[in-house]
Length: 613
Ligand code: M6R
Image 1 (cartoon, rainbow, N blue to C red):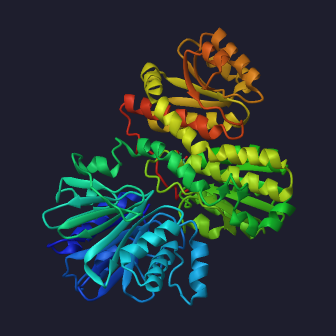
Image 2 (image 1 turned 90 degrees about the horizontal axis):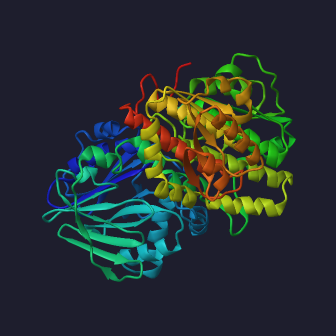
Image 3 (image 1 turned 135 degrees about the vertical axis):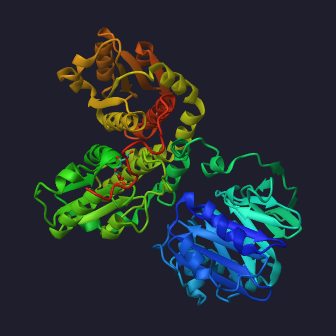
């Protein structure tokens, strides 16, 4: 996701800014830019692509100033391009701004500004906010900080913004809500960053800005205020982290960080789309191919690996809620087996990277036969996103760990939205149930957080107990079957233990032969319509000496008393519960991988983006 840097003081700003942007590259981005304040004029330099491309652009250009801001952009509104890169410049040319986050009500604000004759040079929500601030300053004839405060009170969404103004050659204005901002304090200078990594080596004293705070930063003064214009005392903290740790947000591995990112990733994927209090679902991608979807003779979901597991859950959801026939296909098989497809088919493509070669070619084949493609993709502007006729991005942020975690739960969240929206359009679901599911879906981020807050120590003990197992079996039924498959894949990937996922009842048709005292069997057994059946399957394993590790709903005493080890998750509707039951399985795989000394972030033989077949 976007990275932000800023400098004001006595040394040349540019080296700090460009090096700082490089330190933030790990966050993932697709363009970079810098704005420098030359006393009576502002200059902006920006470029799609890597920071190195920006550096090349800056070669030989005037850089000698002590104040500037910089940004790496991970596209959300508008494709990765020079014009959408930050910093943006206001209509008058007197303000420039970088922004990290999403302004949810940008469309309404843009509408207001368009009526006043504003024109826009990018597709971003950020440029709208910048002009909104300028418009307020002009109309109210007020100080810039006052205009920022007024604007931010009207904005919904998340932001860190840094602003430079021609009028204030010795000031950076900064504010945050939801996205991170750190200010490093030096002697007559200040360093800004999305995290502390750019300022390591310059200062050990930092202030973490809180939500709804506005910072007015001069070389030798940091003024902190709330949006009510009251002065606050900055809380200065000592920085005692190594660079490598900070890049991972304080976590030992990207995989662990990304597991912990999930409450936010799921929230971001629902944000602006699901309003449970107003009973509103907005998924413009679905609306744009509404006629195709309503007339579709079937939906085919095409994906690979973890994304295929998300697709399997999608099949269960869409068939149940929308009463449309759904098939789920491994892209690598689908592309070579001459499937029967025509213009009455809708294909849902699921991919984190948006670049998986098998998925891409399978889609090209289907498209050439007239099918409509709906993409559920994490990387904006990726090949699959561009090929799709319509779609809904998952807003999981960049996923760096090779084993997919937060991208998977974000895919599940978007599939839930897709199924609910289509059910609404079709009228296939009772309105009361739709509302109940919308409410439950909106509660998922805090329930995931609850699991992270309460179950990790239990999972660590389970990991340590079973780390030497040679094989694992993962069993689930109904909505929990795809989660069992995903749990087995995660364990395989990051621990190199052989693991198989199976439908729990199918186990007695073969895999039960594997069961003995050495075999840990993980049951994903949250309360649902087949719960009694899966409890019987647990008994069958127990009777043969297998070790039962269970993921159960809290207060389920029957299942937990049968278990050798048990992880409890909050109550949820059976359709929503997979978003929760997957979290303990990711943690189990991670901690077993760690116990065995595996490279969990970059498991052997695996690539993050599989661009070859
Ligand atoms: O980028 P995609 O979602 O298209 O990738 C598909 C698979 O390669 C991916 O999910 C893979 O299985 C991961 N290593 C799972 O952790």
